[in-house]
Amino acid sequence: FNLTAKDGSVVVGRSMEFGLKLETDIYTVNRGTLFKSTTPDGKPGMYWRAKYGYLALDGFHLFPVSGMNEQGLSFDGLYFPGLADYEAYDTNKSSEALPYYLIADYILGNFSNVTDMKEALPKITVYAKALVHAGQHVVFPMHFVVTDRAGHSIAIEFTDGQLHLYDNQVGVFTNAPSYPWQITNLSNYINLSPYAPAPIIKDGMIYNATGQGAGSMGLPGNYTPPGRFVRVAYLVSTAKQMHHAAGTVNLAQHILNNVDIPYGAVRGKQGDDLSEAMDSTQWVVIKDLTHHVLYFRSYTDLALQKIDMRQLEFEPGSPKRSLTLVDDKSNIIDATVRLK
Image (cartoon, rainbow, N blue to C red; front, side):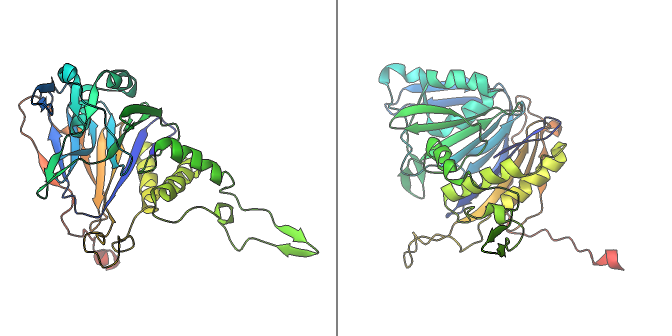
């Protein structure tokens, strides 16, 4: 989801829920980094050198699923099962062909804003190519959202073998169904309000709400993608706008808390070890696109940590730096001394 402060600062919040451990690393990609791809028929595909440096977060150490470049452009890839259908590879256009798992590197390395990216993406072919994971050849079903420091946001989906670009005016994005379906579904919740409903008088009896928050009765509380989409869209539209980036980052944390999945609350088929892989919120990131700061926390360590991109070197030839996002340790601050 996207938030904008009164001073124009743009902040993106994103959570990662998944059943299998993603073993995510955060790492740097320098300007000038060369990318090459190979097409399904063995021809050279697209290649480029990164124009901009960026921070990336990977999944299974295979490809980026989130990131932010030094121009304040944000990228996020989300699971899109049952619907993702990438474009067909054209053997006569191998130099314009890009495997889907390189789309994050292509966008973060080449563009500073949504407008330029939106113009370039239809000129290439994004096709499916299997990656080896856990001994199997897998094509991950994904769709994507890109937001720039001006607050412009675009949803990118490949369905029925075609590219679809949607202006993300709501500023929210999640998994299946498709983005247009999620927007249509919001019409079912136009009754939601942050204000308390007025009492109703019937036959001399006064019926009052049982407490504050009654205006949000009917707000989905489940963990399904549509439920989370509606819940976050409501919070984004009703939460008090903050003056500056710092307050907006804090607001993003509170909104993210509303979609946090405790380990075991979401499971697959009972008795099936594979299907019973338990979804949980493995990590969240908050990106201050205006000031180029990436914040993160993990399931086990809820303390917010940050990486200030302005203090990093992205010059060509600089060493690649990385850190493991999830280290299974809790950062608890002992305040006992403050009472002594």
